[in-house]
Image 1 (cartoon, rainbow, N blue to C red):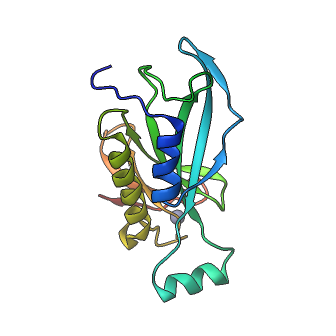
Image 2 (image 1 turned 180 degrees about the vertical axis):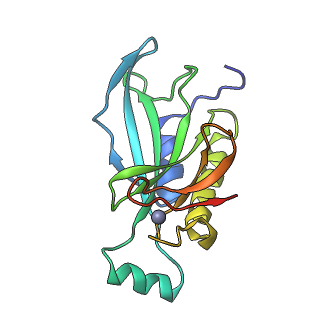
Amino acid sequence: MRGYVEITLNEFKKEIEDEMGFNCINANKGAFSDRGGFANEYIFERVIKHETPEDMMKALAGDGFRYAIRVYSSIDRNTNKTRDTGTDAIRVTLYDLKKDRPVKVEKRVNRTENALSNMRIRAREMWQYVANDKNTCPLCQSMLVKRTAKRSKKDFLGCSDFPNCKHTQNI
Ligand SMILES: [Zn+2]
């Protein structure tokens, strides 16, 4: 893989826990094997807390903060390092804590030289996505996500709580 750089678990944790304020919520489960050997999937989470007093009141009135950023990374069991396999990117995702499922907004970070700083940028983008009112469904306050119409192949924004909410709008 072009430009692959090995990251140790300690380096990874130092960045994501100490610098970025994430908590490790899974380090053992989800162990899997592939041609590269055995690996554990690590999941790190940071709940998105709102910054305006209005948002804070909304969160307190409802059942807490709704979205979290989750970062997934596989770590080789034997070496405690990330691995050089083709599909083994770091995944930065948005998670709906209320619905207990991911929102389909995912960004992949390849393990190249700038992987850790790229991961930080992607996490910041997730945060901004949630903070931007334009990405909130006007009917049910869920996140809007980009979808593609089956026939016309045109992109549009749809509610992430589909099929419970059928709101769509043009991009
Ligand atoms: Zn909606």
